Image 1 (cartoon, one colour):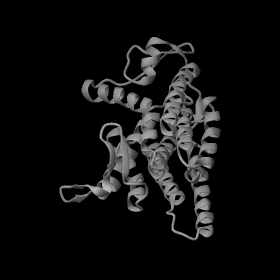
Image 2 (tube, one colour):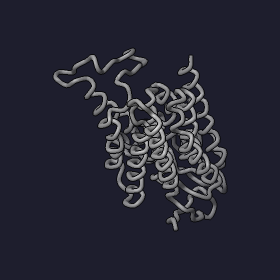
Image 3 (cartoon, helix red, strand yellow):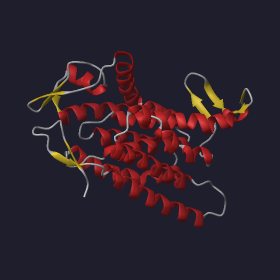
Image 4 (cartoon, one colour):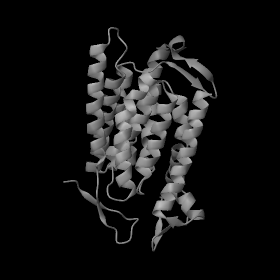
Length: 296
């Protein structure tokens, strides 16, 4: 039923079903729509629509990823796709236009004007799409090995849940459960979530952080993603050098340091599973630090 692609990092390059991230999109959005219905029926005041907004963003992200799986878009084009997935947040004015930053301190966009542009407009139509674009693209760029596209985002998702309040945390119960199931099979090399899954989980991280107003937690948790993407973009844009791994038996090696994966494989050649576990442990560490900073 699902198209199969070669798993190039296993002996014999076996064919593996791809694009099963669509299950994450469908199950998560259906549950979030139901959650929105029951919350709106039982509520007597206008509390916003976070479940509905998150569901729409996941649908947008999943569609963008599915489009990439079908058409194999170039990076110069798909890098801007998350801007469209972030539109529901800006249009429905989700999130709080007050951000705490490590460099500029606490910024209240509702109290500033840039030239003649209101600060709130900058936040909803500028800052939010920027966060969504960075988070989604960096998540999408760290892949290629079984487990990277599922285990690492799961740690980030857990950190966001722990750093937010119970009213928001309920939004991620089902999405996290579904993605952990996909991670179990993906780590064993039985499925790929494809760009459909990586785009959808990337926009989930960004959207939830904005809705729950925990952007700083997201920033700390995705630092390995940002580091990986920075290495890749510097080498591609300035030196025109791509990223690749070499297989010798069941060992993965690299003769360059142009991404997080090849950096580790350069100094510590290992099997695919060990390499994924090493990178996942880095995400576990940054996710734990993000939670500790948020609750301190």
